[in-house]
Length: 202
Image (tube, rainbow, N blue to C red; front, side):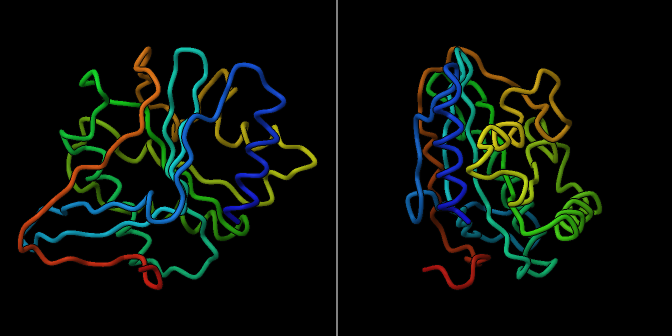
């Protein structure tokens, strides 16, 4: 799914003159750890399938890609939502100018039924806190069948890159003129429990 996503993305960008791919990290280069506060504080490892950056004029947009094969149980899916929630609110998660970059987490899944299940899980999830940045709006969802090499621009539509009216899932702050940067996730240390929410990846 990741290879197909990138292939279609590259083809789509060839068809447009105003958007370019400036960063693509895959594998361990895209992974990070995030502390989850609370009575049982812990550090969670999150392993997105890819992290990429698109530049469209003066706008720079950052994406974490999560490919879902309908195998993750509800508990782990919610833990992923929560982990991204806290990660993108960390005060150290800023661009070089000290501003908040425009970030989305894109879940690509196998079919409409699974997509509806995932979005319902997000809707039912209690908000971990009163987010000043990010929140549920950072998450967006698409089916793998929504885009293909025969019509690559459909992927940009799924990402709302060219949409004149953004969906609620994409309606977060647009940071202008921040340059091309790769966000370096904060590093954490301490004796907190570490929880791996990405089984099978090491």
